[in-house]
Length: 266
Length: 267
Image (cartoon, rainbow over the protein chains, first blue to last red):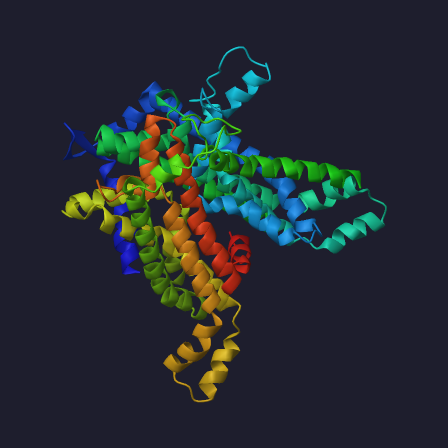
């Protein structure tokens, strides 16, 4: 417990306080200031980094739900003897580091990569296309990296739905599709919201994927923080960015909790 | 049954999306040429040979050491914590839960930045590297261990402990001979999750490395700046196979599946 206090609470408190200190010539001074925040919110470069971070987070959230829902529904309802193996297979990617999984997309998307070879071979494109660095590539990479989390969350809520409800609906003459739309889908909404927010909040703080599939022109908050901390060595601005990141993910989690509370109240 | 077949087709596509890049990475590592050709042309083990050189084995070994130590320490710390949180109602319990699960809510990247500052300002600059990484990894892996151990304590009826106590067993004896054996699979699962989380972490480690003390994930990330190299594909496959083997073995011996489900169902 003391360990957590010293190595978790103190660093975060430190971060919060440095973010309000002025730094000159890469040295922190004792002077209190809001300049760090003003700097970040004033520069178009960082304004775009904020916007890009949240656009990426939202897109990744939506895509993981769209891809994850069918898979989760299938895994929960299937009577296949391979069910256990299929579930394990859908979670196995979590055992690989995000770096490794993103590297797979690098191999596919780079200028001399698999996608270009394939499209050239099929005669669909005349010359090689630069799929990356781009925001789109970051979105694809993160969707791939975070999909298992969303699948797990949605599976959790689908598992909580009594299968008898579906049978009841169908025995009353509702088609399979109708049953799904009017019974299963509404009941699994908390899982959808949970999966979306989980993916969103991890995506906005992800570093590796934007670093590999993006570039200087596609900065996000995490890569900007890394730049300030290790290359520009302006720790107070780096700290201010980190504080903004913390607040964003807290807001998301708070929204999730509120949503969950409302669901429970209904 | 039409909708079900459509769903099946969709599921196949999702699996392809999920596993395709990993399989392509594996395939490319056997390429003969120095390009990411897929399907691979020719067959060669030269990239694997290079992947097994000290340049890559050292960070791999470093990550293994870091992950194992993290798993041992965070599980050992998780035992009393999880026990207190599931068995007792006390003042400040809510705060303790929040503090324990906090690192799960906050981005690990931020914790990394904060720890870097702490070590720097506290005059512990020379401990940045293995020590700082170990501390950081224990902090971010502890929630996984506490949760997993907590789940197995939850499923254990308190009556068992009462029965042992009423038969005259001391508190320690009850823990040692009743609670511990019955929650063993949860403890092992917690340690495995902590190991995997540590082994695959990059967001926190990024800030706390020093030359010669670099986990494999950060090493790969740094190397990627030089572009594509089939060696990296081979290294990637190795780092995937290690945790996979560990999880497969533990699943066979004591079971993991319930904890993944249980754990995530509580998110």
